[in-house]
Image 1 (tube, rainbow, N blue to C red):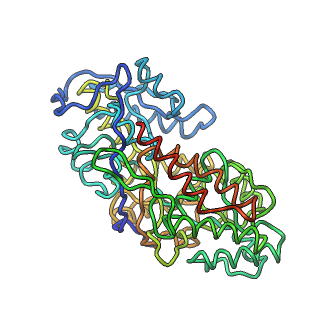
Image 2: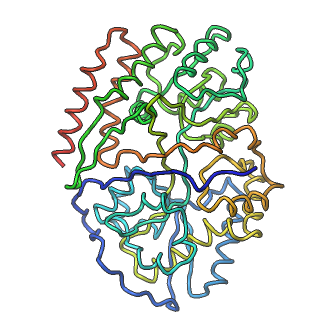
Length: 457
């Protein structure tokens, strides 16, 4: 099956607010020193598989050995370290952060502004593979014409629905709703026919604000307008946001299809969805987590393009960015980029690598062939899928709607995103718990409060 890659992604990454570099982290230099490609160098790479992932850990170690054979002057030391915003600054300041690891889209621009990401512009220019990846995705790692990371995985927010509940309610699981009106209609039908929650989103831990923002995008407005000074103007008091909240209001108070618990975090929703208690929600295509960690039958998982309003701007996107430590030497950065290309991107160009990694994942019961935004051309990605066809465990034909979607993908707000989400959480809660909640006043107050935080720097 053909999948998309040449798309109107339009990742609208805006400049993040300028910040003060932490102690021990210098601002990006104008020109990186030229590395000595023959110098002996050691790099540390994060996210090494843990001991309980035996096949994947074995494959990781084998690939390290293969890489070191290809580049005998480079030594790779694996670490289980993963990005945690609560501890990452301490690792950087203390000098114990790895040379490279994955960073979420939401945090990358802030790290760049604080001088906490290495400038790899010149090194990337010299590499045919790294310089030839999807340019729309590259916007997430670029500021003022300079590049500070490599996108290694990307997703777009989707409608997650339970195919089994659709069938029980007499709905066609192969015809997911394309508009919010149809989502609401299906939610009401499912609740009436099955007694299950027709649709719900998280409301706590900034998750409510994140998904409300996603809905606002799909109804016609972003939540921030970038400014020339590196700050932003908050724009949550909009018709698009009001329409999104009115949808939740009607879901709860008119159709009674929102369930009974309105203080849910993202983990709660995933558990309820996997357990067959929630028929529809929105999230990234969380296939692997739902199947591996929560035991949902893979044939029950529905993934469709995010529903749109009449003036929809598309969906919200994110993913994982390979970050590079600004304290690294030019030789370490050069080696880390070689590792990125070899470990994360080589599978799209090397059949043996693709087959080996897919086989290891399958042995660890990790789903292979999950829906994603390809980082390479459609032709190259189709070749990759052909190479790993014997290990693919996902019925990709079930996700044709999502895989063929041509919705524009917009980035999350680049300035104070988490503060904005936190201000929106209680609004989602209010609309679901108070039938007479004053949506306009709530949005006006939130807009003022978040703007004050941005203005204060």
